[in-house]
Image 1 (cartoon, rainbow, N blue to C red):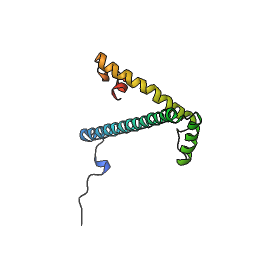
Image 2 (cartoon, one colour):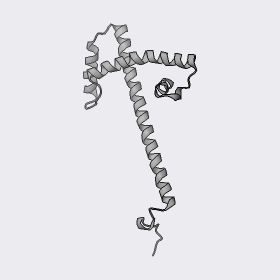
Image 3 (cartoon, one colour):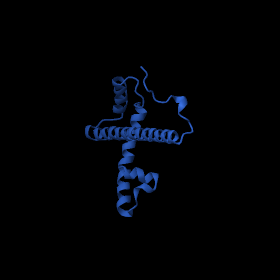
Image 4 (tube, helix red, strand yellow):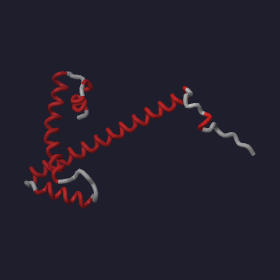
Length: 132
């Protein structure tokens, strides 16, 4: 019984136009998928950090919580997720600051888009505004 097999690696010329196009297309799709995945992760983490900052600001105002809540949150989050990075007290303070900064920046971006009729894809900063 002899079965037909596809060509082996050595029988496909590396200089073959069809092969080169196939490889280039696959490499481009892999690169595109990697960039999209990184952007999705970055977007989700930024949203998480912004929401954590919002939660802290709101609770501090409503509940009258002081500075110690940040350190306690850091300790409790690290205990709940052993080995997780990015949730030190300092980083949680940065999340709070991030929310405070982006809250006012969102208002600025809305005003910029409405009053100046700028297309948001013209610069990196306007792309950020466009995503809000």
